[in-house]
Amino acid sequence: MVVSSAAVGVKGTAAVLAVAGLVAGALALSGGAAGESSPRAGAATSGAGPAAARASAPSVPKIKHYFVIILENENADDTFGADSKAPYLAKTLPARGAFIPNYFATGHLSLDNYISMVSGQGPNNVTQADCGIYTEFAPATPTSDGQYIGQGCVYPSAVKNVANQLESKGLRWKGYMEDMASPGSDPSPTCRHPEVGATDTTQQAEVNDQYAARHNPFVYFHSIIDTPSCAKNDVDLNRLPRDLRSPARTADYNFISPDLCSDGHDEPCVDGRPGGLVSANDFLKTWVPRILTSRAYRDHGMLLITFDEAEASGAEADSSACCGEVTGPNTSSNGFFTHPGPGGGRIGAVALSPCTRPGTTDQTPYNHYSQLRFVEQNFGLGLLGYAAAPGLSSFGRKLLNVPGCGQSVGVASVRPAVARRGVRTRFTVRVRPTYSDCLAGVRVRIGRARARTNRRGIARLRTTLGTPGRKLVRANKRGCKPSTLRIRVKR
Image (cartoon, rainbow, N blue to C red; front, side, top):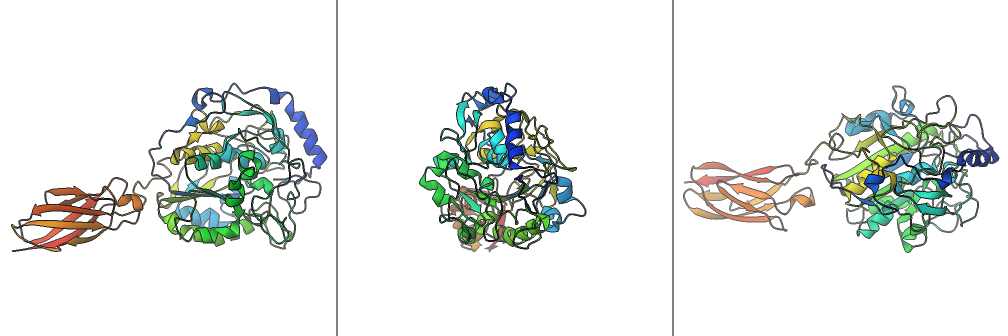
């Protein structure tokens, strides 16, 4: 969310606040908080200083390709209610996956939520004001709970995020930002952000340029923008169809940010579209099928769709929180001065995955730190910042409730297909799974004989079969759907 006296058709700002008011409010909130660490956060779990706590392996199916789409500024009751203006999001997609009614934002306004999703850092007054001037975060003093003390929005290289973690482990990430390379944009089509100390000119949409830097969390970390990784991985959304052509081209972690109209932020939009939930719904109807039909998604993929925050001002303002969220060292209210409170409100979410039973409802409370925690646990990374908070829920078996993720071992062939009764026979069994992890180590059984497949999905075993007729060849592996094939035994 951005609050501006020049706002035209921007939701949630009925009482329009001038930029001067934002600055004054931010200063009023600081109240010396920037010099204090929070004693309430999970020091015992997150380890000392900036070091990330090691994540334990989750007892849930392993996701190979994770996608997340972030929309803007809606309360869960409006989005998922009976009269929702986004029926594809509110009705169609939950029926195909899972509805998460108790998913919460971590603050107000926008940028602090995006930062929390990828780094576990709590709000500060400048990120809460959406960083109208691209300002260095300082002094960046580390605390025992994984937070850094300071004000500003461009974090020094010492402050890590999930993209850094993935790269350190040899995994790939992509940020897909709609309109980043629009005809009205700056010359650089990737890693687009203001110069340090400059005004952010993307705070308001233009007809040919509705990209918002504040909805692109990766460009607020020197550990990304000072490296070639930014230009390579922080790209326009138009790159996604090409990357979805094969799992080999699809990143392990994919962050998708629509433009200021497609994410529902503006209503109406400068290009004539209706905006709000109507345009967000249209965006999802275009892009979600492309993801769900990709081989990367079908092979243990997952898509999460949620919002950055609930309404931040007006009669429907919501700054509620869940999950024991604390107020960090850099603000006096996670809800900001627009609507003081412990968090960013209840926004809800939808999750889709071959590992999720269609029609699931997961009532567990989650927030943006929970999402980060899940990603880190899933990929075997450390826990950053408040993702390491004690008692914080991560997506588990209530959400990812299909252990085999619909993937079959798939017995493709058995040679010979006909055996003679009482004759010891050497069989070659080949499996052709729908999931690559179901290829090697599959247990194959014919009668009393047992063997395991090699890396090519082949098992060889000898046995003598007795009774004539049809005989089952069984193949199974934990986490994969069992498969059978019949052979014939003749006299």
